[in-house]
Each structure stands twice: as C-alpha cells, then as structure tokens.
Length: 129
Image 1 (tube, rainbow, N blue to C red):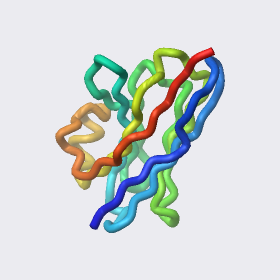
Image 2 (tube, one colour):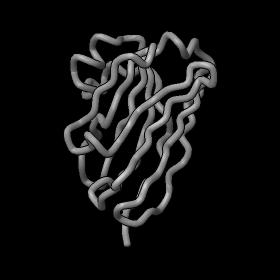
Image 3 (cartoon, one colour):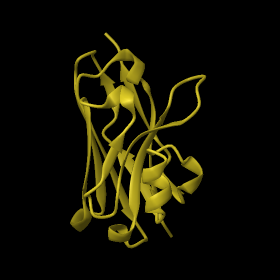
Image 4 (cartoon, rainbow, N blue to C red):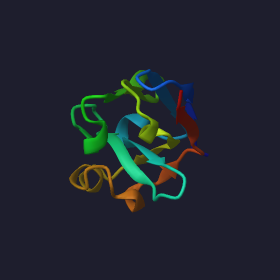
C-alpha cells in the first residue's frame, strides 16, 4: 500500500521560510517523478513545482520562481520544498504527489494533475502577520 505523508507546514510571518517534506512508502521512489501542488480557499488546485525521478529536471510555477526550491533524497524516499520569502498569497493546502509519467508532468510544467497517481492528504501553510 502506497503512503504519501507531508510534513513541515504551519503558520509563518510574511518574509519567513518553511520547508515541506514528503515521505513515500510502498513504491520504488527512485522511479517516480514528484510534484508539489497547492489549493487556496475558493481556488483550483495548481502545480507549484515538480522534479523528475533523478532530480536532474525541475520546474516551478512563475509565482514561486526564485523563492521556492524543490529537491529529493532518493535514499530517504523523500521530496522537499524549501519555501523562502513567503507571501500571504502562498497560503494554501499543500499536497505532494507522485507519477511515473515524467513527460506529462514536466511538459505540462507541473500542471497535469490528472497524471499524478498517488497523493498525500495535504498540509496547511498559512502566511500571516
């Protein structure tokens, strides 16, 4: 059984930082391409960042470029999202997801949500003073 578990969320002031972690069990993590997604209240879920199986290819939605960094540690079955210079508009539920379909995920610039096979339950990030 595949389990996807996010951690590291919480409340942070504008300009602050958080690091999200996502650990996966029950699959061969090193073969999977990973993405971070978010959904703000009243909005559709969007892709934030994604990384291919080797870590050699990454992409980001324009609104987080230069502030967020995605990385992975295949030895720990974990993908990370380092979030710096956080803004109130980054407030959302953040989800981690996995897919074997590298092409669809990267060509869509992390927006092909239907390509993702396994999803976590999400973790809340609130940016507020």
